[in-house]
Length: 132
Image (cartoon, rainbow, N blue to C red; front, top):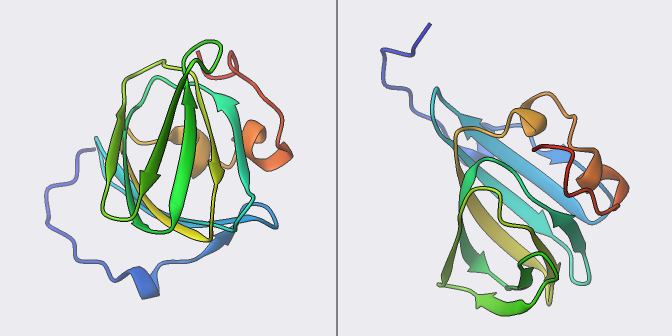
């Protein structure tokens, strides 16, 4: 059933999930969107993956280097105050160049994050086809 009431959240009140020794996250999800705070330690690698969800990445602190495309042919470094948009089903991976606080917005919400079936992230293995 669709949410019909506005809801107010405080990031500090949201549970902080330890995904790996290098990644923690908090997220808020509604019917058609999700926003997340992702905390990455310097040197953390987010394996190559793709998903049906459109993604907006906004770096609040630190920097992430992205490799985008089937072979990672496009490299982009996104620093504090910068935004990267990633269309649906575009393969990408990232590395934290320093301790980083990343705000990710997804449409629709990442069901694999909600039900904790995001094995590519938890195991550190590239897994392009898992979510297609």
